[in-house]
Image (cartoon, rainbow, N blue to C red; front, side):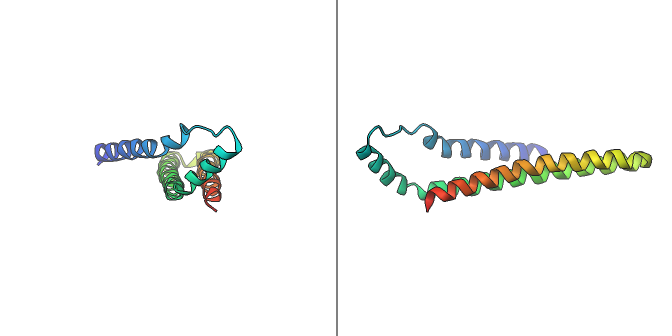
Length: 119
């Protein structure tokens, strides 16, 4: 199960990178006429922008969910082994979960920015 998940996650990462990389290497327009043409070309890529926003947010949520699940499982295992350490372990777990969730929120903000380019 773990090997299959690693292969699928590697393939998904490669597909996302290959799908988004043309936008990163696009040339900037130098004068106003070229900028208008560039904006017209951008309108044909609205579907790609929407797919990039959805995939980025979905992958971030998947990674965040997996990370939070593993963190909670490890914290609960530590508390089960030493119930007296429940306070320090719990507070550090909450801090770790907040940091993991902040990364997912950053991807949500980036997805909103990308969707804002569409409208």
